[in-house]
Length: 118
Image (cartoon, rainbow, N blue to C red):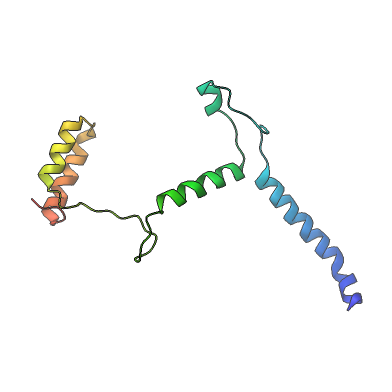
């Protein structure tokens, strides 16, 4: 058994060196450990490594899907009995921009399809 291990040893060394390089690339942080300076522009322009963004995405994913129930960890979309007229009124009163009437057209289409009550 040790003869076979001796033959495989150089290949294992190369494989672990490649894995080590992969993990080093993932953990690389171009700016090093950077604290917040209080200047919004400087803080937004910080270069963070992959592990920072992986942790950030994981935290946001847990928050997003924290409403899991017996049907599974999916985000629920409910119109809650809102009528199309109520949606249009809400759009008009908030003063939200509606480029090209896209939202209004979408609400009309939903009404015609029977998704929201007229």
